[in-house]
Length: 255
Image 1 (cartoon, one colour):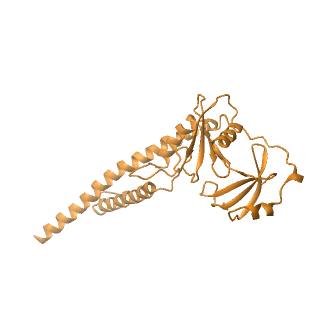
Image 2: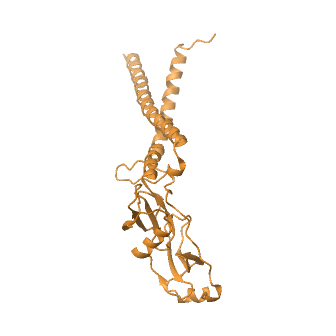
Image 3: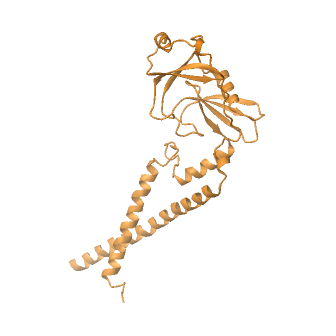
């Protein structure tokens, strides 16, 4: 009786492993098929369109009258907030000192800046009007600005971005949106319908699905990939156990 129970238990375990292997094979196949399909799409797509920069142009820079520039040290002293860096930049063709109050490792990391007119010492606030002018300076199309919106992360067109931005929308055929950093006035980038279409395939390729209240992260550093890796490992292990079982039973014969 005990021997029969052991055989039944062993059969149940092997049956469970086989069933698990079959279901895992379906899951792994579906995602591998998605990877293959999106990989082919990325090779065939028009990379210029995918960038979202169809109407993007370089911002015009003007000559700086260095004799008129304020002393950077005096600007730092006059600032009400401590700054770790001060750099001379241009916004709308005018020189400004960019004061760094908090800086992330990368540009898209959470940071805090302020802009001071390098000639007069007046602080520039990046409001709706300034953001619209900055966006317009980077846009070479003929369409007009339709809306200007203050947006907070997560930002659908730039999922990695962690800073507050201005979204300046143009009424062109591609529904172009230009994003401006709300504290530094830096051009974050352009987006349009072509880029959004490609971003959908990137979401599929990286398994970057916004599930169970979790936002997409704009890359492969997400919990879905980790879970899929564990399931793929289980798929390989159950397949190995099944293969060993067939080998022990003599199902494989070698000449």
